[in-house]
Length: 163
Image (cartoon, rainbow, N blue to C red):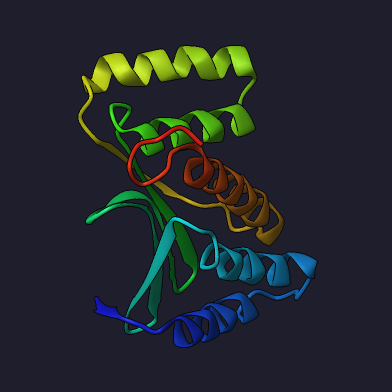
């Protein structure tokens, strides 16, 4: 994949969204959420592309190196989410906990965090999942990712100081 500039990547996303039969508010919300992510302090979004495939990789800036949180890929007919989190890294732990709280009850999220930490032994784990075809469902998932990413960006300063 080659790196794309943000306007080109968002334009390609617009073409991908335009392939769906109905243009709804969800169509615009998806593009807006990805655009908004690019302006969150402490977050870096790197768009890439190959042929008709466009990816948006989202990182938490942690000084000299970035902590990869997730990537959303839009390919003909399908969107995929690749999430990577390391519970031993502060931003990764906050991102994962926030995302789980969005998707599950708080009690369930705590239990899932314990499970993730025990099974990963502090090493990064990657989950690849196809996303639903429904733009309304995709909008909801992206909204959850956006909120969890904002939490991760605000929880820990680059030098590790509590925010």
